Length: 121
Image (cartoon, rainbow, N blue to C red; front, side, top):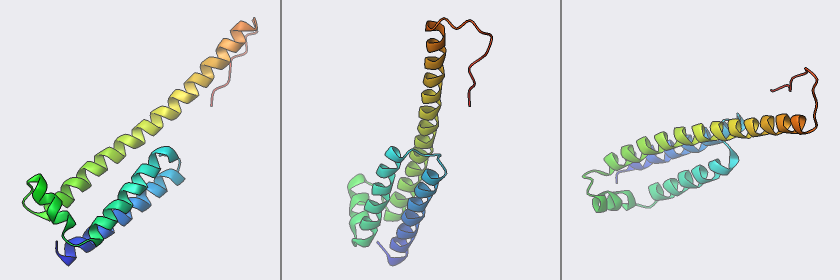
């Protein structure tokens, strides 16, 4: 693997790492999912630092060029990260719906017949 490809892989993985940190800080990605992504980006940086590791993996997978493997992995990681963000959103929404349902059930079990409605954020 050439120096240019190694530098490109290190830059990509570093940007990926900081994108994950930014998603967590904005609340768009849960911390439990982000730890896996951060570990993955650090592992890929280590792969870029070890000469010929990406080329060897590419040959084992039957991919002609190491750069093709890098682009394939980047594409797949991007898709997987976007799906993880969606799972985080859905998990948050499900938790809020369960809390709302629990409040309604509590209210019904207490026999509260007032016309006030439960406020939802």
